[in-house]
Amino acid sequence: MEADAGRKSVTFGAGGTTVEMICAVARDAAEVTIAEDALAGIEAAYDCLVRHAEGGQAIYGVSTGLGAAVDTKIAPSSGPSQYRIPRARAVGVGHFVEPDEVRAMMAARVARFCLGYSGASAAAVGALRDMLNRSVHPWVPMTGSIGEADLPQLAHIALVMIGEGRAVLPDGTAVSGAEALAAAGLSRPTFGIKDGLSLISSNAASVGFACLVLQDARRVFDAHIGATALSFEGFRANIDPLDPLASRLRPSPGQARVAAAIHSLVDGGDLMKPGAARRLQDPLSLRCAPSVMGAGWYALEQAWLAVELELNSSDDNPSVIANEDRVLPTGNFDPTHMVLAFDTLSLALARLAAMAAERMMKLMSPGFSDLPRFLAPAEPGSNGFSALQKTIAVLAAEIGHLALPMPFAVTPVADRVEDYASLAMSVVDKTARLVEKLRYLTAIELIVAARAIDLRGPVALGNGAGVLFRKIREAVPPLDVDRSPSEDIYAISDMIAAGSLVEPLLEVLHRHDSAS
Image 1: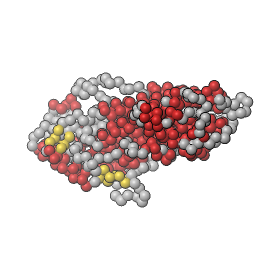
Image 2: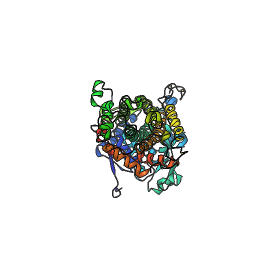
Image 3: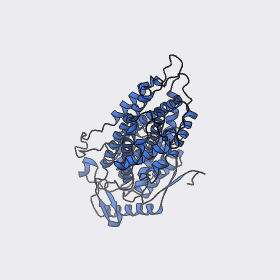
Image 4: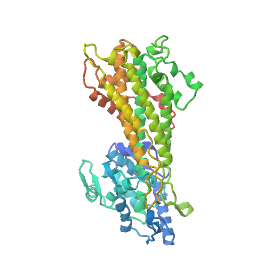
């Protein structure tokens, strides 16, 4: 299929992939192609698998049953016998994932197939690619995976590939899997001897979803840098803690980079002048922002690295290593390292939220800011942002709650054979909800800080801060009279989500970025 004019293209090869590539397929509808080296590896692994199966080797899911039924011998077979595997495991419940989320899951599975260790047939891999390129989006319920391979989510995707299950057409119409394939001009593939298992025995659903969460988290983090810089401007804070010397004295992870990023935004403004700060010692939510936000940046980098490790390694059980002529049972479907990285990221982002809430409360307090209470308009009886404090408080509380780690002891399943679970999908899902709430909180800080700047009178903002302030004012007018701030918050939140608000101003933050 030829790409539409101007459509992006992503090529998955044997050398691996990146978070950005998955996001491009998921959110920019980039066309997926499979590199020649990847196709050769897929075919070599399948041929190796067939040889071992024909030689009588016991191969999990090929010549044996699955889970607790591993003691059941079956005859290796292609076609309908492999169709049974996703049918029995499409047990998801709960809300259905969004189109970009299911695209990310599908893209992650194609990318890992291209590493050449799954034993899937070229026909099955090509069929999954074609579903992406023709916008066949299966209905996938979010809940059901315990994180030791995302069997339910991937099974719901595989059902559509064989003409069953449910899918959504590009116009939003819900149809059967068979109708979706027909509308896209696709036919169901004949499965090879491991295709049913290969399509579902992976944590590609949680890994693909994690790519989107990381992109969102990074955009929120960028906006959080901008919000902090505007709070420095609105508070007329002391910029000494941003001095590079402070970071050299205690080089905690990310501190120097974040300090430099905030400093770059306020550079060129009045805050750089001697005596510009109103206080010698500002509240810790301003003074310690570089170290706390630096820890957050480091946590984001580590989560990014963990996800890319998953994208670029095999999690199949069994794996097929053609150049070693082996079919190897593994436990590589367990992504505990990624789960721990996301738990840490959530805890770090919750600390950012707590500091942001305090900065806003300080800006609204005359005793700290020397500005009108709640930053209210001058008209008698005006409320300003007084009620908005409640929204700030509940967002900070909910973020803190979502940051709590998932349980590490889970009810054993599969006749107690599967007696441990990473709960990867659940962890990634709650991190996504946390990031969304942090995006709203950050949007509020941008609005509150901009209002404080309005009330300061004529001050020269830093060059980057000035650009950011003007962007906010283009979307949100000054609070000259009381009005509902909800639409303003949504407007700024949407700009953050699109990555269009602050990213272009943060070259210092992203230069030589190891997570890019």
